[in-house]
Length: 285
Image 1 (tube, rainbow, N blue to C red):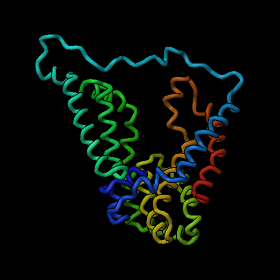
Image 2 (image 1 turned 90 degrees about the vertical axis):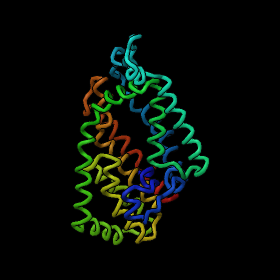
Image 3 (image 1 turned 60 degrees about the vertical axis):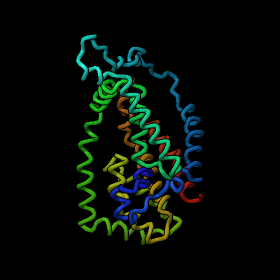
Image 4 (image 1 turned 30 degrees about the vertical axis):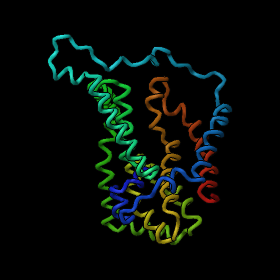
């Protein structure tokens, strides 16, 4: 969400922030976010040590074996087109061009140049560098994309929900409610809890931002509240509520031979334990 808010051509930035993005030094690189991150990184592992069962289940080491390489060896008489697809030189040429562009981009804009587009480019460059050939990278993406089909299907529905909220006037009603029941200081905390509630219907950061971002930003502007902190409050609430519906853990659970029921107690404990951390960060910093 903060990366989307820092991207000038993001639809919410265009429509609700007059095309002026929120720089990361007002969201991710702030004192309250550093406090929240540090507190969670330090305290939650300590909590986890007290939750370790006496007889924990173990994972079959064979299930953790590395995946086979996505690189492919070609015969000497392979046609030029196939050789290009499997060319290390071609892949690293693209990597070098990407690195040069990113270096120049950040030299000119500094940290303000970091947005959703540059982050995507960074991942593409790293992916190509690690997989070494264009087709190896594409095979890895094709393999990984199988598990994201459900998420891809959800996003058109999120867009439809956002339009319904906007054109039906429901977004405006919710905005007015936030303005009526909160003030400049309490607004981020209320946003956090409302975001957690909405997450049960829209458990996705991107879709969540599209749906809740518009009316939260409008309410923040009306109250004179920190728009950057409001954005982070939406992100916090979405992440925090994932403890109550840990679909993110399904791949790991499948490897360990566990069900969601086996981890819910630990997740809910972490959810309750971290409430004060988020509230302190949003209200007192």
